Amino acid sequence: MTAERQHHRIVVIGTGFAGIGMAVRLKQAGYHDFVVLERADDVGGTWRDNTYPGCRCDVPSHLYSFSFAPNPEWSSTFSPQPEIEAYLRQVTDSFGVRPHIRFGHAVESAAWEDGRWLVRTSAGVFSADVLLSGMGPLAEPSYPKLPGIEAFEGKVFHSAEWDHELDLSGRKVAVIGTGASAIQFVPAIQPEVEELHLFQRTPPWVMPRPDRRISAAEKAIYRRFPLVQKAVRAGIYWGRESMVLGFAKLPGIMKQAQKVAEKHLAHQIRDPELRARLTPDFTLGCKRVLISDDYYPAVAQPNVEVVTDGIAEVTPTGIVTEDGVKHEVDTIIYGTGFRVTDLPVMDLLHGRDGLTLREAWSGGMEAHLGTAVAGFPNFFLLIGPNTGLGHSSMVFMIESQIAYILDALQKMDAAGITEVEVRPEVQRAFVDNVRSSMRNTVWTRGGCTSWYLDAEGRNTTLWPSFTFRFRQLTRHFNPTEYVTR
Ligand code: N01
Image 1 (cartoon, rainbow, N blue to C red):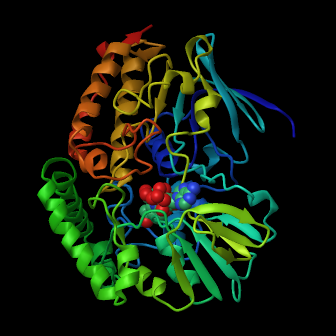
Image 2 (cartoon, rainbow, N blue to C red; image 1 turned 120 degrees about the vertical axis):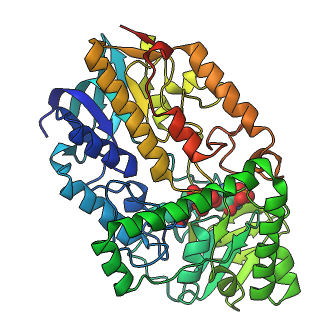
């Protein structure tokens, strides 16, 4: 392939909800000199990559979509993955973003050099005045280092890289992990496989899933009266916002919610011994609250064994647990999540004076408003540190950040500013505030570990307050918080 070398005003990385939303809004605001770099051959981000059986969103679709692109056609409350991926493709095409995307361009490094970003990709080099990252935190599968795994003779894959070529019928399958992904694919594969050995390190809290099909009549109403769909969306939004009170302010609310989950478990799992194995020992909300009506019934089937002893080693034909028992399997599926606080991109990005993002984040991931990092001029991160949510739609956070970035670009243009870099003291004050808000939340006091926390136990992933508060804070770009040139 001929190496490209192009300059653009703006380079966006990634085509998940963040990258696509950013691209649409850039176009609408009159910015046309931009490209979006995408390593894969289509858009969708995590919703393109996660194709495991049973994959669907656990946030209602009326809320888990762009405010500027409501979709009256959602088939159910919690849409399945193919519908969400199709929605992202449709938004890409209907807003004319596809011509801006360079598929098959994996970013290998991005460095701030001579007042510009130099972005090297697998298919050419780009330079840009402004670099925007839409690389979400759920992009790099996390593989546990299991002793002996190299010698395993069966098939091994991760839920985010599902092997659709492999027919699971009649196979003896080990599933490692019981997070949001596993509780969706376990019920889907359980009827197919001969044996399912579910390696559970920590049992999750599981709530009932209030899902239902959206009728043709309802869809027609949404098509004809968009305000009705807007009202439904607002109702879901405010219902979810109220959950923050439980997570961060009123622990009693979580205890009440926990009772609902306990009832759900007791209702679906009759065997007291199995129920005990599946009962969490931490406060609900400490890890992501899962929703499912078919997980417990699947786990109770005779071909499923819930293994709670730790994994000691993998042999060529199975997994040996710490109690010495060998579980003979021919397939291992990792439902072990993502490298959220150890993003590979941390090594690829070099700010001022060669500083890598990993070095800048040696004290934990941090960014002003989860969006701008001191030492990294003209760089903005979508879904950056402390912008994740345990209760509501990430699309809301993404749209808040997009508006902030657009305001930054417009203010730079209006004032003839070519360079902005957040002041370290501004970033410090913001991060200190977020960290102190974290202190009494269920995420840090709930008695669990989770991907929300980094290796040092800091919650550098979640936004600890109401999402409308984040929107207020990101409503205006304030140039005085930045060193400008
Ligand atoms: O990953 P996870 P996920 N040995 O990190 C276990 C989003 N999502 O892919 O709890 C044994 O939650 C680990 O055990 P423990 C959503 O934000 C959304 O399921 O750490 N076990 C845990 O059980 C979600 O939170 C949807 O003790 C090991 C599991 O693997 C995020 O993605 C659907 C292990 C990992 O759970 C990640 O979910 C799916 C080891 N060495 C996902 N290492 C929606 O519906 C890890 N585990 C929107």
